[in-house]
Length: 216
Ligand SMILES: [Zn+2]
Image 1 (cartoon, protein in one colour):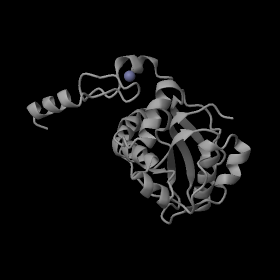
Image 2: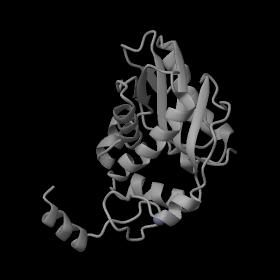
Image 3: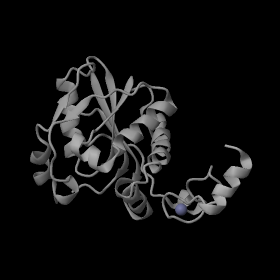
Image 4: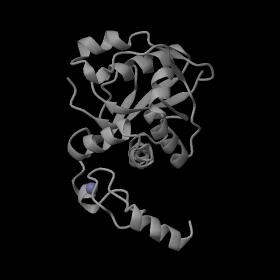
């Protein structure tokens, strides 16, 4: 963009940190220095997702991460997905390099996508695929709406809620897939999706999420 115009836009709409909302000084800084220092990072551990060989998350789902994410999910600030996707891409590159051939995501149902206007996990996946140079492959269809998993308390309620809800799309046979979702809670959704992908012919599934909540 032409420099004077960018300057005026920055004055009128100063860029803000995508986690804490404080004003940052340039559009290149989407995260303020204080947040960079204190974001609750995670190291990629062994998978607690059934049917997935590995699973990594970028950040702990708490404090500023949780607030920033809720803004992304519910306030229409879909551009935040690109910033979060960039953070996730760094973690994927470090932890899962060489373990997948294509990137895919946990989809919303068509109805939910229409009402929200965007699919938050898809934006993360698009950003990761673009930055790391892998193809983005649609791999799952969500057949019906489920009660939002976040409204269900524990794994016992969540597993039946997602059972049989997804179906595999053609074209994933023999692919090693990186499956991306926004927040990992109990892992019921990711397990169901990974299982569905393997049944659809995928060779292997590894998972990555932007944030991980304490499992219940
Ligand atoms: Zn901040």
